[in-house]
Length: 282
Image (tube, rainbow, N blue to C red; front, side):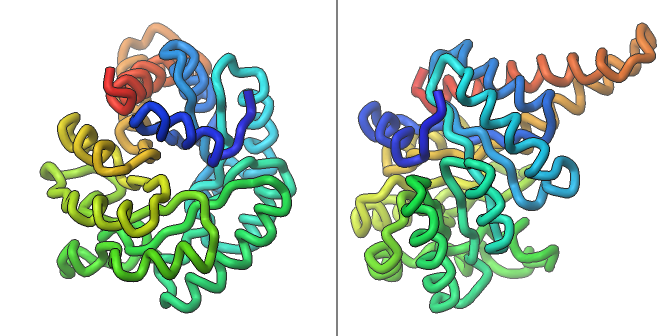
């Protein structure tokens, strides 16, 4: 069942849970995400990240994502993740995505505000939800520049800015920075949950955790209790698929790529099922 982000986050708010967003970088991960959502009987957000466009162009993978969502037994939102260019956002809208993220978090506040307003005007006219971002994760979102020399707190979302931003943009969800990072963690992230609580109080909006892979179950529970309603999860799902593919190749039983892809798909589905259950409080 194809739905937009606003509809799917109403379910999360009703249940006081979070909905997982998982990137589909190919047909194996696409099947893994839908299979996991149906196995858990939970809604899901199926995403294409602009940074992944080099691997699977949105014009090819987008229609397949939409078809899978329409045929799914559970509500599925098809979402553009980290759309940093208006060109990519507009492509997603034309293809039929039901949600888009405009990520102008690396821009000045004024530029972020203006770009987000532009996207909201176009998307809402089509019944499409919009996620924006204030604050930045300390890794992975600044064009490859090394930012590890700065403190994570330098990137945290400013709760005093969000009320003005959300009122002037009318976004449907807001991604915030409060201690997570993209990619693989070398140590457990230290989450500043006071940021979540203060932003939630200022806006009342469903809040989004980026860099969800690698956070502890307790960290997820506390973040969800504070108002996180969407959790982006990809790196460890991809790692599970990679490791399963490597094991399949090492057996030497097959020389066919489809056997390797199938092994990766099954491992990713198992990892996504675990994540969905965690986000659902199960």
